Amino acid sequence: MIMTGSDTITAQELRFERLLDAPPETVWGYLTDPELRAMWFMGGEIEPQAGGKIYMTFDHDRLSDGDAPMPEKYAQNRGKKWFETITVWEPPRRLAYSWDNGDAGTVTFDLEPEGADRTRLVLVHSGLRGPQDAKNFGGGWGSHLAVLVKRIRGEHVENFWTLHAEAEAKAAAALD
Picture 1 (tube, rainbow, N blue to C red):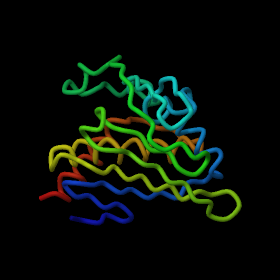
Picture 2: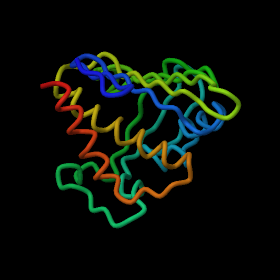
Picture 3: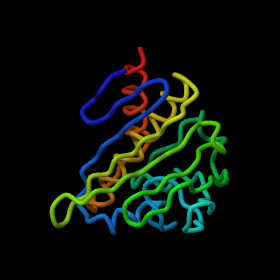
Picture 4: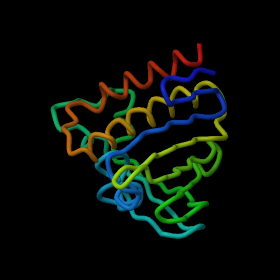
């Protein structure tokens, strides 16, 4: 196990904590509104209730504002669509859903207000199948959260894949 700042990465669980420059209601929108979610993670319709579906569309070409070619190892995912099952729906405080139909665990987002206009986001991806999942999802969540921070601040995201490579390297180092 290693803690990198406010991140904890083990073969079984990932925990990321970010302080975001927006109130919980705004952050909730970025987690649940298909268009806002597509700006930092993956878009797709959502059935807003526990037991509902959250659809995912792998369209990472739109995560970069600059020219950022997708690495070959991810190119076969371009346009892939699937859904996960929402297990917790408590707006604007808590959202959880399965990953890979639960075979790769559960992703939980907790939002807590910090002062008037900030939110502490804690993302926990639990139930991982081992080090390969931890590296893969650690790189994914680390980079997607970096984009979320920038989008909420209204900042430019030149190259998502550079952020992804950095986050994946951190996750791999944490598991060595």
